[in-house]
Length: 181
Image (cartoon, rainbow, N blue to C red; front, top):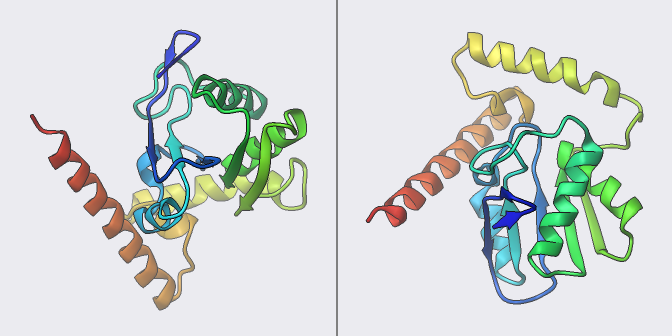
């Protein structure tokens, strides 16, 4: 879908309803959402995942502020023809969702925040350094950064990480098979 000359990649599933827009974490693409979660949500409502401007399959340059990402998201939602949505923001997506809810309260019916916090809130200022450390650790150990970013380092946490990553790989392979001519 083109929004002010920028093509946004997106996917929607589920029945017609007030849509639930899923807002990604830092550097995530629409395929980073757990298919088990998306499919579960889409069983009862329309769910829309998308790539932010300049990320994944979306065109344009990546904005350098949360406020700019929020403006893009509102333009994207409006271009889809919606005047009322639910937002689920994960991590950085939660920052974006909060800006949208504050600036466009009539647009947001329900707001769901996961793994996030308010701008300037306790601990938020350390997120970037923790993220960089975890990504470096993953690179050195040749593991997906999600092992460190989203899961505990316990045996159970790492088992859950492996299962999650397997679901992502399976969903990507299924999508690739569907898109072949």
